[in-house]
Length: 433
Image (cartoon, rainbow, N blue to C red):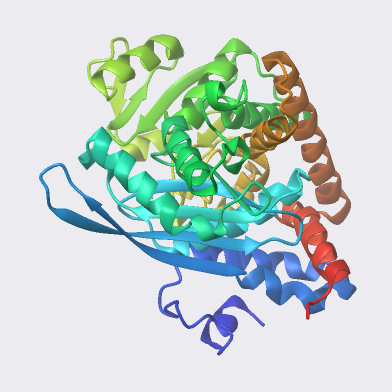
């Protein structure tokens, strides 16, 4: 059955529109692509990949500073728990939809399985523009949302983490809210917390570091030296900024960066440290010295060795994919490339390191944080980074081996590795009752 046939069948969940599945349709296409490569004995269980285990939609009312009450819609989706408790971030964004959160939770299932950490996939979100809220309003929103989804949370049930527009302070509020409801301090209920509350050293840079490690592994396979390599990065948040900094530390040149305020370019390389300070003060790239402002179309056309989309999903489409000439595309964001764009990039000769592998550094160090919280024994940052590099390198090598043996793109190979692990766990556990 093709994705189009599946969408039109009665099997599609009734809470989604068949006319516009959004990011969930992208995920369904990826499942369709991997199905022929899975062992026949696992095929009876494939439908579990297409159906989230649990979806919670909540109303999040808060009192604003002006005394009025405002309502926001929140979600928490647990896609699959066969391999362990749910794990996945929480995002605050005005464009959050159920389809998006479902897809993100499914990608977390795959991502956790690719790097072989003992988690299932989950994701959460609130449809809100947090930049329009005061700090007090943001805290009240977070605590109310945490209270509404509390029935799903727990260190051995579902463990949130930061995502778009959330951070360690938001995680601290969630941890405190959950702990107050439990009557005891439970640091392991979230990851990405402040270090002083049981967070892990190295967590802030973990996703960006994982992007670099997988990019370097890919470069070694196709003989691209990191030194003087040209890097183009979309997004300059936790992932993009950390990736930029680590690439530069290893001798590469970040020649262009784009965020929601625009794109800047310097063929000789940007001063990433100065750019970070400038953006922290001015909230944009405006007036940053020594760069050329370019439009978004020019940004995607820049010749480079590494292109890193590290913003949000759906950024590389059939329209701009035709102009991309990067030798390696390393997906720092979740779902940044549409299926049609993926095929175009492959035809143009770009090697794509997929999101479920490239940006798994964050959840890997989240796993380290969770283990440290449970054991109350904490590692040094050097130990964290060494463990992260080992796991990410081994995961890349495993995916590369499957890709070479079966002559598959890395994305499909990553799904083969992950889906085999998920479905094997599902099959071994069976059905209860």
